[in-house]
Image: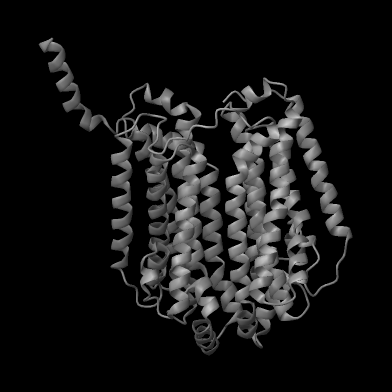
Length: 539
């Protein structure tokens, strides 16, 4: 008995250094699994930033023009709420203003997806239990996930620093480090969410909601004051990124805030990870009703996706209202600048500048909605690869019926969120609500086409399904920075959004939307046919 107790005491003492055993192996596994996702995210975000100097230099080629536009931007409350205040009128300062906030947000999204994928998602699928049966420390999976996020953010920081060094090494380094810092704060927040919640979906929702709150706090603070000094701005890590003041007298001490917040959240995540079993959570699922109410596969799909649809819908309503609110200010800001007018008109049409700007905002909402439809379609992929689809299909449910429930929510949900986005855009603008609403709804055929590609890829092979994110990312990239880079029309037309009529203000041509709708229907039909003929994934 004494020997057993001694062995137990020895095991407890020896456990400390072994908590992270196998971290290197798990990190290599994570980077191998993310060999497409991380480079794609990093490349797209970096390209968005590095394309800005050339685009802005073409719009505002002289120092006087840059100084004038900086004053106008700083005086516009709506633009400050969207992009933040301008701290410098150099080309680098305008790049930091135009791209900084959104670069930090995208880095945060990338980071939370990486961390949740390699923590809670692994536990939910059962793979983590198999790995933990080997020589793997208790905290090794969390360490590997955070290190994978660190690698991604470090690569992003290096690309931004190297690409913008010509504008000033100090400013480029500040913007790169601030972007990476925002990403790591979101990564460690996602690590905490992964310990607290019961599923990867809830962990992503909680971390994403926190990131949204960061943006809202920053926007509220910046709309109130024009120098980033609001308490609300300082409560948000996204606000720290702008207050780092890249290319405008860098405040290097702000980096301490990123390091402190990330370190504190990481410590909380490690503490929680050591106090729960694999697969368990601190917020377990509530027991369901005594009598089940999910009588069909469609009802199950609705139960699984209703939270995501609600979140996207509220987000689009708020984003539409924000975009509508800056419409008048943006039109005044453009003024007589022919290059700016040309870019906006290339994105939104050849009508009046206000209509062109509204068309641009409607197009941006549509391209973002393409991300929703891909996410919703790929719920089929998650259900299949996690083997949750097998028990459903073992009952009196066919594959087409099972898939139809999720696809109805994906394609119908896209219509709902675009409707809400249009209502918000019209309400924020304060006039021509039916025309603005029509401009948003005309984006649906292009959104459905991207969704049809996702259905086809999943139907052909579960391994090919994640490629739908690459398609959606390419569409977003073409629509966002393609016009600013002056890409030829043949390249821009590779996106389905390039074929839609530019509303409001333009003429409504029915042929392109109808053709895209038919294309989307054909892609869905091909994808479902392929799904019905192949074997289900085994893991």
